[in-house]
Image 1 (tube, helix red, strand yellow):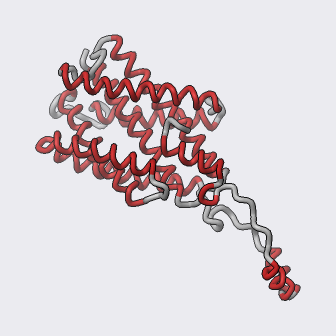
Image 2 (image 1 turned 120 degrees about the horizontal axis):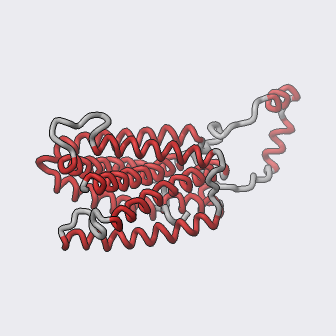
Image 3 (image 1 turned 60 degrees about the vertical axis):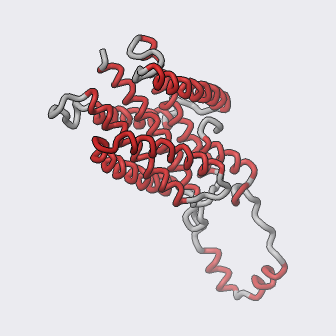
Length: 286
C-alpha cells in the first residue's frame, strides 16, 4: 500500500517472496530420505501423530504479536508524551522541533532500510511521544481554561477519546465488511494522501509566514472542511492498515515483521489524533 511506506513495503515483499514470504517448500534431499528410512516404525508414527506446527512454532507473525508490539510502542509514546508535557512550559519549542525533525529522519530510515531495526522503531516512538506531548501541551495552553481541565473537558482528553472512538468504529466497519479494501480503494487513497501531504507542506509554510496558527482556511468554513477531510483520510487509512496486517499474516510474514506492522499502525493513530486535535482547536476558536 503506497500511501503508508511501512505497509507498502510489507505488501510488496509478500508478493515477491522476500524474507521467506510465500516460498515453496524445498524438496527433501537424498540424505534426508536415507535418514527417514533408517527411522523405526515407532518413530515415524510418533512424528505423524504430532500436531501441525502453528505460526508461532514456524516463527511467523500472528495477530497477538501485532497487538502486543502495538501496545508496547503506544506505551512508549504515552510515557514520552507525559515527560514532554511536563517539560513543555520551559522547553516546548525545542522539544517540538527536535521531535518533529527526529521523527521525519527516523521515519524515512525505517521505510527505506532493507532489514527491520527494532531499536530504530522504538527510538521513533520515543521521539514521536516527545513531539505529541509538546504540541498537545501547546493546544491545552491555548484552548483550555486554567484549573478547569478534566478527563472529559480538556481538548487533549477529548482528542484522545475521539481517536479511540474512530479506531474502534473503523475496526468494526472493516471486520464486518462495511468497508472493503480493494485495489481501487488503495489507489484512490494513495492519490488522496499524496495530495494532502503536498498541501500540508504548503500549509506549514503559509502558517509560518502569515502567523495564522491553522494555516490556510484558519477557522473559517474552509478550514473546517480541510480538517474534516484530513480526519476522514486518517480514518480510512486505518482500514487499509488493518487489511495490510491481515495480508502479512496470510502471507506468512516472519515474526519480526510484527514490529513493523505495529509501527505503521501507531503512525496512523498519531496522525489521526493530531488531525482531531486540530479540528477541536478550530471549533474552540469560534
